[in-house]
Image (cartoon, rainbow, N blue to C red; front, top):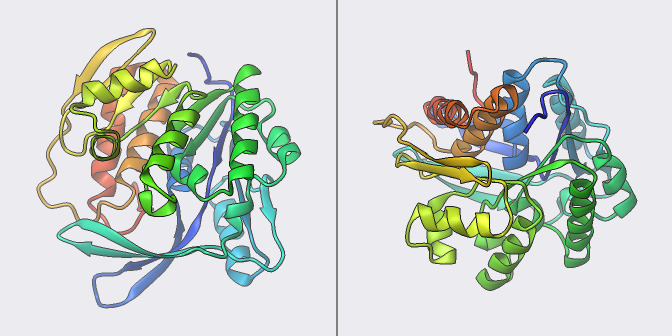
Length: 303
């Protein structure tokens, strides 16, 4: 796969993040799975590599601040729609011994309408080399809009774009686990690279091992699958890639596991774009994830 001379478009919801600062107060930032990945990728890839975000925000002051934040990060915002009368979602991180849980306020999030216009979707994806989205991206959409996104992704893939999908299973966002699994399966069938997390896949798809997760997504038609597995062995393989496994270095005392998977995706994809070397890419993803969980919040300094 040679996509070094191409561009990257990520699709999803960026939210206001409230995270504990360790001193009894909250820090305000902006984050969200599909955005976290490209925020890190922007720092890892050459400046000439084009990175854009497709989402929707409201017309309130927090929406303005979010757009400014994304711009300042070096990520193009011209594919982000403005929707009058709506705002951006908000979530709060709770941590206990490094493990995180979340409280959400996103009912009036404009991002729920990011796929309302099929012409906008098609124009945004035209000529893009790599398109990234997640299970959260599709979960927040109304059924009709989800279908529009599916059709746009399918068209983009037929026109030569490579599609990257992180299933990121979040049952609280779906009407039922069955619908979640059905829709994740459907969208996986239009993806070239799939980046699932084994714990989630075992819980909701009943996979008995990471190898079973790998085989299932390859059977859906992916060219490459990388099964993340926390601190345990990562399994990867594809139609033109021999099966490979990698055991990351153990992290004794993680500070905050928020965005661990998003950071892995960023490290992996950035290295794979630059070298097309699966082993180096997995190692880079694991190293970046370890660095991120050693600090608080979803977006942390890489210096």
